[in-house]
Image (cartoon, rainbow, N blue to C red; front, side):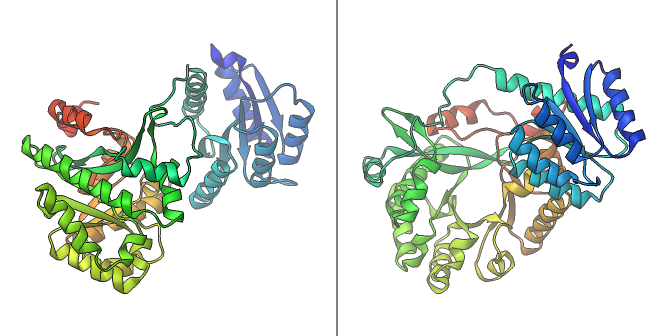
Length: 412
């Protein structure tokens, strides 16, 4: 019955198509439907009825006087966060660009659909609006990963590093072929005595800006190696990835120091994968290449992280002995509705296969993304669809209780 209370604005310059959408809304029990011929008229209506905010705006793109793009910009200023549906018969690539624009302006985009709109599509989109409304209305509890403050000083952060209060949280990496856990990525979390678990964006940027990443890099490396050794002793044949900072690669002694730290824990280097961003491999090129070649020679795996987000991806793959290509999550999340992103993902997987390196998709958040990656023969997936990052003890419990993902969702 929630549909009766919805206030919806339909903006469409084609009279027949606008009336068809309005008729469908009425058939779905929506009682209050506003109509406008173009963005300018719609904006005047919204400003005249400021005391009665809209729930959903359905907007065409190609309209006279004020097109859909300009209208959406104004809409974001007048009613930020309002649910929006884009209606268009335009090219799919153009619609995708407008979708990104709408998100950037802060609008809550329910979807972009090609005309003519079907009743089933409309009902589904109204359902998405209701789901979002219920989620926003749900009681909010403090998140374990949300700090109560984010203005930590460099001295506070360095003290946390020295006290070893920053620990690795492990996010599982799953084989898309077998559904088995084959590894994890170690992600830094600050265990604060007062504020709880603090995410990396509250402390890593300041360390990077001040060129003070080395302490954290080696703390994470040592803690991750110990965690990996513990897991392997308990019978879990896993390798763990850990990030190497951009600044670290300038120091030609880095490879030897990394090798020594890992060997001192009792772990063989082959069970650690060092993740390097494209920008890291491009800074101080000669020194970076020397370090990366030496680390590979020592047995470490090397992963090119956030693949596709830099300008030198192809060049990096030809000059660094990478063992793994990690496809950036922005392409994964975009693939369902963006054919260009889907092509990037598929071509990256095919390139990895031809280069005989492992393909890893990060940021997998839905069954549809998992299925897509399986269909593309991607090797490994990680993301919230599988599990969130967790402390080492919780990860061991997770491994004990785990059943292969493909079997678990076979009937989903």
